[in-house]
Image 1 (cartoon, rainbow over the protein chains, first blue to last red):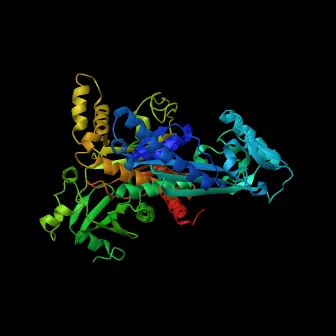
Image 2 (cartoon, rainbow over the protein chains, first blue to last red):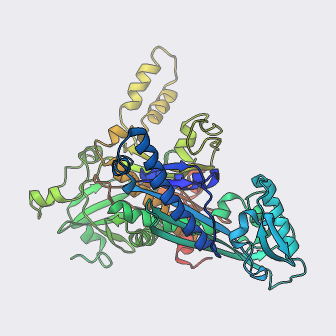
Length: 239
Length: 320
């Protein structure tokens, strides 16, 4: 059994490696592909990505080997043990009801969005680095939330993790959610993404960027899906 | 069948002895079942302290009951069938011959079972398994310079990370330790004879050295050696799943899981030992250590019981 994960995010790679390696399961990292994320929700986009990665790994890897070894596609798939290879994909983001669910599926590149009258009408990738775009995303949300008072500042971090086989069939799916609210300004130096503007009851009102990793890990939306994934893995291993 | 909730101590003592160590006494109840008495002892190798702490077995039993239920819900097999206020009723796991020799006990053979039935019983290896999430304890203290060291740059997943003392390890560490007795009589005398030959050492100093050198820590086994006694690959999975199930449960109580000492049978699939504050490190985010650290750092027996009871109260939800 082995898993293939398509990402450039070292933090996410380590998170999965820490689950799979102690179970003796191999983890391969593949180049990220950029499937068109046409879903309206984080869950839909996670599924789209997992299925695209599944087919990419199945087709691309096998076809590459088929050419190199001048063998049949079936032999190449067998040689690569693709029937035992699964892909993992995830999508996550910040959902703010007062912004009609935005940034939602656009969370990673929210500030690259084209806005008219506070509404997202298009998207133009700027190519900015992770830290730069994170800061800009946070400022964009704060700007859009100006004038909005509690209780309408509620928000939630959402994540969906999907496992698919190399034919693109979804085998496992789990969603996680952490509820809280949007702060009026960026606070704290730890964490990443929207952590500096997000607070919750579970963080005792502190921004998530003020929490050390130990405390954040106890309450995060990621914890729940990784627990679900670990439990699912246990069943697969027993089979 | 014996009712472990109402069994008087006198009747327990009449049952055939299976094995008795520093922390437990195991007696045979027939039909492949045992009754286990948790002795009220607390031990710390670091401090070389072992003492009877009256009442300390109660929070150990209560925590074990809760943790074993957590493992059952996670699909992990545990030999404990019922955990009462004084005894545990469990499936018999045949102790290893090394354990009988160590404690000077005649090897136990269940009188009511056939040879085939005995062969089919789960068997214990002379090994304990440590699941470690944070760099603490003997791993931190025993490897000088490990804390602060950087992961090799060519590592496929963890390159760029550094290990820090008491910090999270990149992944759960599963370690196999050979179970040594607390002391190995004669070891200190042999060492003294080799080291102190011709040295003018006062007799009381020599005696202290001999006594101290009799102490015997568990020894980390190379995996190939461990695999001769336990299915290492399967045991690693079971240990990891056990630790992650407990970690997830403790997180709901704002408690961080640091490490755990586990007993798993030769097949690597059955957990059979105590799971309690006596065999792991658990730290509440605001209330601090809830394990044996208070004892390791010289705390009193009352401190130990107070901390362990607090853990039980947090687990049951009586304290939030």
